[in-house]
Picture 1 (cartoon, rainbow, N blue to C red):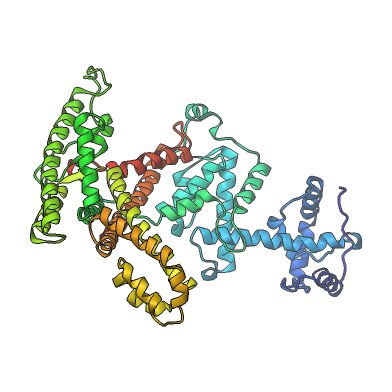
Picture 2 (cartoon, rainbow, N blue to C red; picture 1 turned 180 degrees about the vertical axis):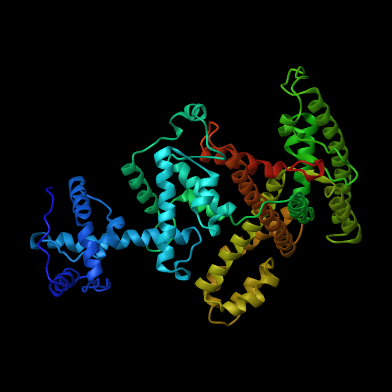
Length: 541
């Protein structure tokens, strides 16, 4: 592409007519002022050589962002030749989009343009571009330089973290103080210097990472930083409070499922496998709930907390760990024996006196009290909850199939079904009576009696396996879900706080080997796993 030649200076009215014609198709883009003052013409004439040189350079490169020349072109009274009229149309649009992106970046860093004058917006935009150009030219910046080049409103921990992350992504290292030559040499290729032109392009590219339409960043890293910046770091008391909520939710789940004989029978089967060596105690029990016990039992996964000097028992664990696990196993089996005794009492009371008899309730309460002293692993609680949840899911599936036959297929009114079917859900005679009655749906129901009664028999079998009535089974499942939600919400809160802590720690270890994002990723993986193992009674953070 050859350099474009500018036409001779035209009178102001003619220039205005040409400019308006060039923007006829852009109804939403206001035309630029046509009348220029004598002072503006003089300034434009003085800047004419530099402007023409920039146009020539942009033409040779094939594409260029002319946002830096926008103020010059606003005062330029000359127009493009007729042959390049289409090119002249596109230039103002390109420049406006670039300015919108720059303004969006300022909004991204907390500077609301509507509260600032045009002069202040231009000044702050230029300060940010100057900072990026300085970093690209030298290869590094210091925190003091960042503070000096940005307004006081930007000197905030969360916003500074986002700025440092953006600079690191651009290859600009950020140090507490100016590094010496040896430090820069050791850093190697992490920070690269650039020429003045390359620095200018890098600054424009950084501003262009912002979506001009919505004023939001499109960089997922900066979006993550911004969201995590809204999360408060936890204090020691805050950690304990959240940990107690997690534990309370898990205990509520165990208290709910302790009313289900099926889950108690499953726990007793775990005890038999532990006693025979088929299952490890650490797979089922984490420890015991005791306010007076300062040093709680530990699970096998906590092997990293012990020294490896005594690693001579042949199984890869220390003697201290082996001793702790043996103590845990012995104490747990004693509690499981008491659980088995009370379960036998509850079963006999059910056979002799029935469900919820005084003897049955007494044994069931003893079982619940015993379970509340045991801290089961998260996986064990999930397995037990899964058993109960699958039973309720089967019941609801059979009920949906019955409703589909009686209401959708036979034509029984929905209101009548809801009122009369639940009390007779296990009554095989109810469907026969409805079929014998003289009702609009009776004839069709008579032909569908076999599948209806078959589903009722499946519900009867389901209740026999669960021991408790179906309505009580649903209530147990409801209480279990409430405890699970409370525990999940508290765990989510602690995970978010841990992710915020990772960022706070990782920024202190930048430029020491691992990249900033790698530090965050590794820290996130470790701390998310640590939430399930966290034990506030030991004093760990």
